Length: 440
Image: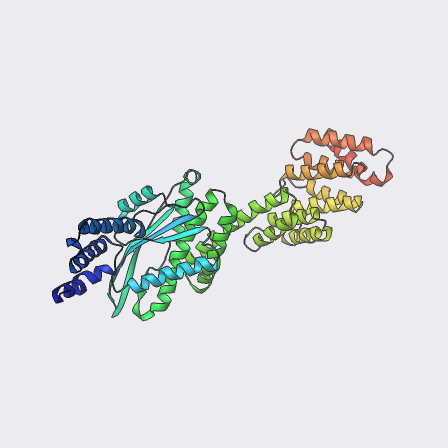
C-alpha cells in the first residue's frame, strides 16, 4: 500500500472507523474495503468486483441492525433505547455512564425485565426523529439528547440536554395525565452535567439520574399494565438511592420524588396483600402489609388489615396487639371498638362485647373500615360457630349503619334464639334497650 494511501487511511478514515455505527463510519469502512481490494488487486480477479460489492452490501445489512437503526422489541422485557450525540471529549464519560447503568440493572437483577440498547448517535437528533424511531421500532422508551462541552468558571464542563419519548399503551392512555404528572415530578431539579473538577462524582450522579428516570417510567408502565410484581421490583430498585439523595439534599423535590415512589410501592403491596389474603396466603399478606406500614402516613388501615390477617392466620394475640396499636393512635377509633367487641365474643366476655359495641354506636360513621367487609367476616364466623349467637348481635349492630331495618330484624332474631340463655343476658338487655329506643 502506498504512503499516500496509508496517510489517507490514518488521517481521513481512522476517526470515522472508531465511529463505525454512524453513517460516516459506514462510508469509511466501505472506502476501506475498496482500498484493500485495490491493494490486493481483487478487482482485477474474475468476479472480484462483484465479491467486493457483496461484501459491502452484507456489511451494510449487519451495520443497519448493529448500529441500532432498527431494534426488535422484546415480548418479555421492556426495551429502553439510549441515543446521545456527545462531543469527542465527553465520549469516554458517556461510556462510563452507560456501563454504570448496566451494572445497576445487573446488580438489582432487573436485566431480566429491562433491556438496554445504546444506538448510534446520529440516528436521533430531534423530537420528530425520536417519535418516528419509536413508532418504527415499537420500543417502550427512547431517551435521547446531546452534550455541550465548554468552560464554566474556569472548569471544563459537559452539559447534557436530556429528552424522552415513550410508548402510550392502552392501559396507560386511561391514566395519561397522571402518568405525565409523575414523569414531570421525577425530572424535577435533576443535574445533567459533568465537571472536570468533580468528574467521578458527577458521573455517578448523572448515571443515577438517568437510571432513576428510565426505571421510574418503566415502573409506571408495569404499574399501569397491572404487572405489580415487576413494578414493585423496579420501584424497590430505585428507592434506596432516591431516599439517600433525599436525606443528603436540602431540595424538597428530592423528598417529593422518593415519596412518590414509596406511595406507588404502598399501593402495589396493598394490592398484592389483598390478593394473598383472599387466597388465604396469610403469611405472605402479613409480610406485604408489614412493608407498607413504615411507608404510609395513615397507618390505621394497615393496622386494621394486619389485625384481621393475624387472626385468620391463627394468631389471636397478634390481632389484639395490632388493635392496641390502633388504640394508641386513636383511642375510640371504630376499628378498636369492632375488634375489641369481637374479641369479647371469642372470650365469651359479653360485657366486653356490649361495652365496645355501645362505644361504636355513639359514632356517626364507621371510618377507615369497610362495613361490608366486617359484615362478611362476622357472617362467616357465625356460620363456623352457629351456636354462638353473639355474632348475630354483632351483625345487627354493624348492619344498622347500612340499613336500620336490618338491625331491628336481627336484634329480634337474636332475642328469640337466646331466650332463657342467661349467659347472653347483658346483650339481651342491651338489645331490648336499642329496640325501645327505636320504637320511642
